[in-house]
Length: 111
Image (tube, rainbow, N blue to C red):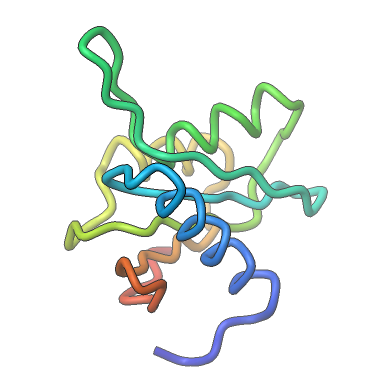
């Protein structure tokens, strides 16, 4: 994978850090169109489940974000879930989504 831009590297690091703090299944971070970043982890409660990427997007939207520039998810999964991708596409038709492994190494960029 080629070198990431510094702002993209930052959201991968934020996603990895969020996951590491709680040992959640996934960590995610998004950057909105104003350059603000939001990080979150998977929420898996008996009555409520949400992916890390959906949680990060919810944090961004609840803080007033109207669009996304980029997103990152740190996961062991081989693909970003379709529900998570749809949440990104609700705010940005073409924002890249960086899928990284647990070491923070980007495995693919979904556009």
